Figure 1 (cartoon, each protein chain N blue to C red):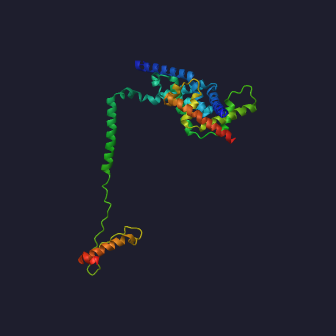
Figure 2: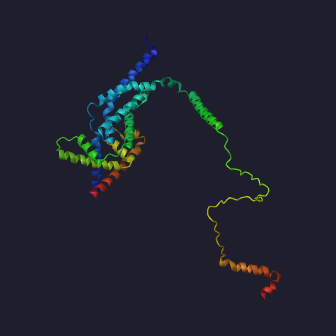
Figure 3: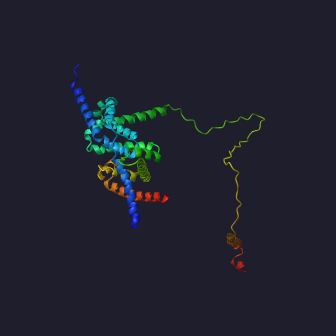
Length: 158
Length: 186
């Protein structure tokens, strides 16, 4: 078992040695010069990108200005929603009223009958009601009891 | 046209920032490259990642003076850059790793065959490291950098020092299991 543990340890150590080896690798020659050169070229672009933001830097620092900016954003969003909703046409109702059919004299009329739409897709299956056999006996007894009410308790005993 | 005091001050400030950035490049480019290479394992990709790191620093150079530990701060940036790149990259086949490692690893006194065998061994080890869960793998990779203490690794990843230690412990245990499994398959 000790050998197994030692093997495990040596395996992990080998993996860590690989990582150490990579961590100690030298950077390629001329890396620093290339980086400096690229940064020198990128510097004016980076400054022009952020230059237009600079005047706002100090201006946007105060909490009051933050609040004003937040209020303005909320106002714009709410205003925009209101404008959109107010310009939308009123929604027509979903239910459509059927036009009244005028019955000319001599024609058949519906006699006031209304068509009921078929709401179920499938045919309605009615399950046969089977009374459980266990319940029939007491029910029957109770029925005889109620029938026998007129005979009186004595008649039943007989 | 005479320059105003404000524009002169701006120019002076910009020059100082550029000098500070150049100093950062000469001081930490190599460290950042090694961190990037340990994850990406490709020289060109690693150099690109370092370049991107310094470009990010350039964009936020106004905040340079506020940074307490610039080394850890830069490693943290390059670490995020390389992880992001790695996520977007397709998985590198192991053969690529072997070729790249044979090219870059030091091989004094080794024959071509020994060199290739060593590269294969290292590629196998790295393949096992790749199988570790991301959290454990990251701690294990960063712990290989002698210049990074556990406190600094914690700062780079954004966790506590005790989490670094427990993740490293877990990583070693998992690694042992993975290596056992790999050995039994061979």
